[in-house]
Image 1: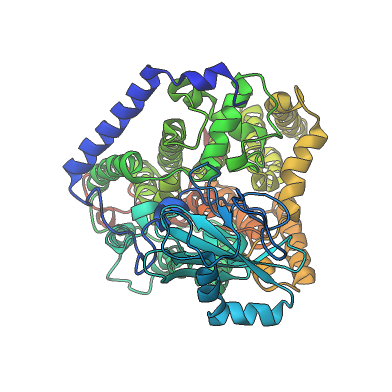
Image 2: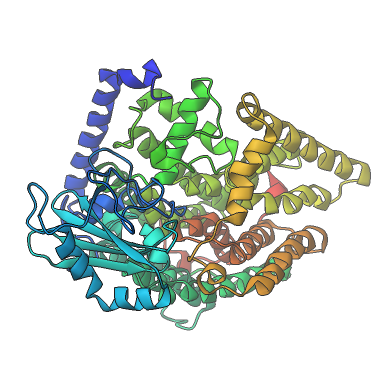
Length: 634
């Protein structure tokens, strides 16, 4: 792929478009005067100056065990590792490659410390002494890093696994970082400032967003309203993220599960509950038209922040690579660039969604600013927000539509995903699109739902669990004859199969379904991860299997057992299935919260009574007995 002339050209027009996009974002951000273009990311503390730059390339999948090594001296026994692989937590480039230095008392050219001196500094650390006691035969090796850094890596007896890592400043001899355990292989578990989301993690951005998210929905006359608790639970993931950002994984991981379990129970209650004759009335602090203005402001702020301050993690980079491979006629799976070797772990629809943006903004062939990934993330974000507005407007009127759009724009974890330029908001958008796309008044509706369900599942595979729920929705049409209901179900299934087949064409045109399975589902199922209780603690395989089986049973049960059939019931059931699926996976991350967040908000706000007409008055000034409309009402 590196020899493709389409990559080497890097047209000036595309560069100009990228520069223009950045300039526009800078102008918008300056106009809002909310955050400076520069500043320290949250938790920077005493970490090394190059940490945030290095963290930009941290992948969401575990890197290889050993290192990318350029030896400059013969390796003595117990020296360089036995195989050359990717350096954990960094892109592969000539400038970033490690250079092995054999034991010596003489400093290399341009360095103050010798390799023996840095080995002695590392050996004196309590962490490394404990590591050598725990792993007899583990040995160290010294490497040059740029600029003016040393890395000492401790390897297992056979040299195949890196057990410990120490980063030392050459000028001062100070230890900058010391890692053991899973934090050696998982660079994203080290708490590098701004590795995900850049400045959105800063308290001066995150806390105001939390306040903005809750404030319009506060009802001081009912301080113990269940909605207040729901919103606080949605924000409580912030506590876990704070620990994650400070590399305290044993605290961050367990704190994810209480809010997930609460939201699962809450959604199940709404999905199974009967529609109230008189739903509790919404009492908002501000008129809906004020919220509409706030949405415009927040959208501008989010776009400006993305263009000027965000970083593209491996997920967005993979989307651009896959899109380029599709339009270039190359195999979609296998042989990805070494700086994103496992970028082909997603469904084919994910890469196809990036094609328009790769065509418009191009790709230089390297992990650069990737304007195509920025543009895609912004488009996915705006699509999800727009669909939430349309859904809310259909269910309870324009006031609720605006409230849902505002909730998306002010919720910090949707901005976290946008600032990481991941593909997770695409999942949310496709799931939302499958809800209103069908109307029982339209013969094309079941087919649209089936096609969208297939595309969502072939983006990231978890939404495939929603297929039974969305399929049996066709059997729940009120007043429809059995023959008509079965024909709608058949239309759903046919459209699902056809959309899946079309989406898979780029994958099977150059490789087999077996290759796709091995690179995606099999890889995802077999990789370990410290970002779930299953991977962090170990020994919980039987419990995890029960949780996964429970998620399967729940997906089928909500599809066949009678439930609330309006939009609230459907959104709540879908949210419950997505959350249950996430509870059992090995690799969970905060970017997955937008998968279920819009469904949760639709269910929570849809269960309330909204003013039917006026946008000028606060919602509490009017009452409405309008029932929550079924998604099928057209």
